[in-house]
Image 1: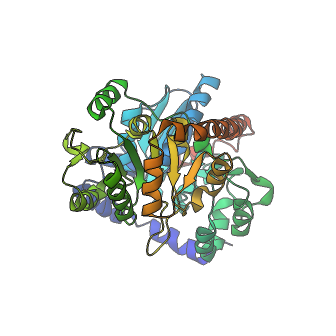
Image 2: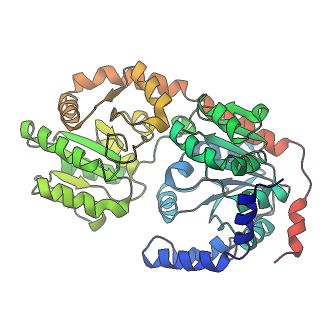
Image 3: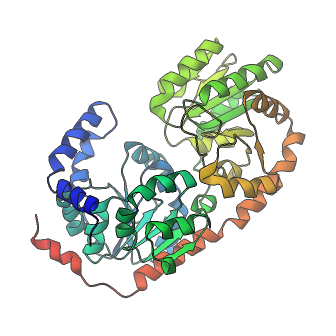
Length: 443
């Protein structure tokens, strides 16, 4: 029997489309939605469907979708008869893909909102042969309409931290009702397996694949732009703070202040996790330093620039390539809800020595592997971060950490093969019937 809470949600969803429209128009007025493509979220104004099989991949936003890049490239190379539909939910993800460029035979659309009408129009138009959901962006209507239409689905590259598991267990019956609809559930780590089973996932369908982000292709480069930035920086000492969360940024700025006392020419490039938080980042930086520049305003790095705020989308590959030392943010101790870490392999893949704080729960196994190889350095607080930044300006101090990072990266290629095999098996497995056609008569 369907859980009462899910029954109530689905009843609300049947009349929710006008409310979705109102909410998204409000977000558009704040610049957080693209008005020109709003119709896609309601199953309208979609790109033409190719006249061949289409497999649907869904990922929430920038990090989750860019982690699929290597997998998508491998898939279209292995199956030249196939096109891929990639959906995401955020405007920033589109901006990132505009910079990176979609692989051949991959179409991007915004995912439809979680209401029956938009989902049915979406499915009727695309008629996907299969669906692959990345990480844990599960919505009831999306899942039930997709699998109810006979579209076989798998979940890949997902995990549950201890804290999030406790939260989701409050609605275990709802999650169980959704998870049983996946043919396979491939997780990032062994610790997540019993948690998914406790939520209701069938144990015989759950397996560990590893972290797909570790096997992803290196972030894209912009050689001409990088050369111009390198010329502007010259021989100055440099470090990069990546994906920082606003509550930890006072510690990052303080670390730079302390380090700058001993290295006055030191430059910090800081990329806030959310570009919308850059005003706060700038205010913190200006309170401590006289010379602050911001990339989104077209300001350049000058000889006196002390902090450069990289508040643009899709340029992380630039900063990691430029910076010999990178602090991977969302990882320092802060007041309130703990932070949980960010993907360290983007830095490792581009030869930047990794610094991080102690709060890395979402990537604990990845950081443990890097630490065991002496390829990542834990910094507990601002003074420790300042000391590490200064020490690692010396190439001789950096050199021992780079071989270990390369070894760990090489060992992390298995998740890509596991995910590709699972997707190919999904495509080649027995069909559940052309049930998508049942929507041809529905509005």
